[in-house]
Image 1 (cartoon, helix red, strand yellow):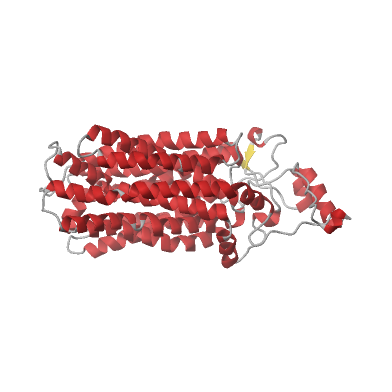
Image 2 (spheres, one colour):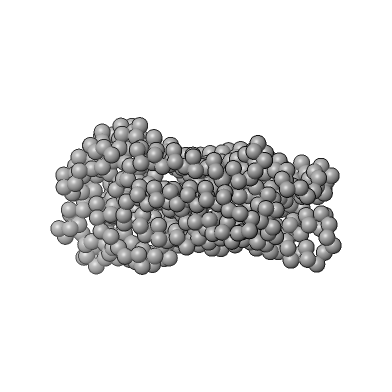
Amino acid sequence: MSTGNPESGSEGRGQHYGAVASEQRSSLTGHTPWSLPRWRAYVAAAVLCYINLLNYMNWFIIAGVLLDVQRFFKISDSNAGLLQTVFISCLLLSAPVFGYLGDRYSRKLTLSCGILLWSGAGLSSSFISSQYPWLFFLTRGLVGIGTASYSTIAPTVLGDIFVKDQRTRVLAIFYIFIPVGSGLGYVLGSVVTKLTGNWHWAFRIMPCLEVVALVLLLVFVPDPPRGAAEKQDMADMGGLMSSWCVDVRYLVRNRSFVWSTLGVTAMAFVTGALGFWGPKFLFEAHVIHGLQLPCHQEQCDSQDSLIFGIITVVTGIIGVVLGAEAARRYKKVNPRAEPLICASSLLVAAPCLYLALVLAPSSLLASYVFLALGELLLSCNWAVVADILLSVVVPRCRGTAEALQITVGHVLGDASSPYLTGLISSTLRAGRPNSYLQRFLSLQHSFLCCAFVIALGGGCFLLTALHLERDQAQAQRTGPGPPTPPLKPGTLDSKAVERQSLLLGAEAPTEDPRDPAHSA
């Protein structure tokens, strides 16, 4: 980590990123401003993006070999859905712990421990005998705990290195790797299984890539001061630590955070169900169209996992870039652009997903087209929702905010949706004739609720837009807890604040007309 004074001028033209203030700021506070060379900032972002890719490959690699895992361990649809539920349940239970650690201790050390845990558990899962399916479930839970550290802490590191438009662009690239990693998880599982004839090897290749990620993290990624990229008071950047309960109370009262979290939860519900069961849904659609033989052999054809993975990668890249760029441009004319873009994309994605499901028995091509459109629209939001959180929450409790959003999103979202989808499918199939057509229809009908859930998510983002500007203004001037009462004009403290604001190029605090001193 390098330190030094940033060059004068705009932040976009400076040679250092993450600089918290200018030389005048340093003289006021007595602290040396933190800064990072431009090349180092971009290298750190690239490393974090690479690890995010591996993170989401771990999430969905199991879906790429789901048919083989079911046959190997002899588990039903409902129990297969429980695999993802165990993974995400462990993730959400550990996310608040990592959020607390990330706001108070070394984020780099926490991330390193998380990578070691998830890679070791993933490697171990590939050597489990078919007689111990419960042990396979346990290792998936350990992988979930390891990935919780990264999902919670990594965005806050980027938020402390970049600011404003730079942060929007970097987060867009970072969140591209959610759909790209998810899609490559399917592709890796499919391709490695086909090449080796053994699905276990998909879980043995990942640790090799993760060792490289750990080395890159230790060498190239800094651990910046919390709030380093924000032009805030040194106390707001971590000099004063509040308790976890105070942070949570502040976040619960932050309406933009609450409504955007519910919108993210709706997205997680749909992506969890679709991501886990999508390849199997497409496989059974091919069977009823006579384009694919039913899977009776030990090694199932995983071509549909490959197709679904390619769709996820392509639509993910395009969607994240479109969403982030639309938000960046629209913000110039409308400060509520981000939640409005999220709301509109989800409200349009709902009918697309519905049509993809209902048209599958009659036209596979139409189903693929609407499925791709639905995934494209869902992907538009990944970077935008992260930017919303970073803009409405003060820097020193962003790790806790990420953890709470992850926890709520997974508890009500993708921790339950794969299991509920499989359970509904099994329940519907139990009352129907035992045929491939009825098996497909059961899974199709269990999917239909996703279209309605994603429409509710769009409504949550509309409510976010109503409170966004107020919460952003409060996040820029206060820490967790109740807002600081305005200072009376003419006092020593208010004059000092005005002088400091002028030196930093910020607006001086305005007088409150309701204040008795003002009327006097």
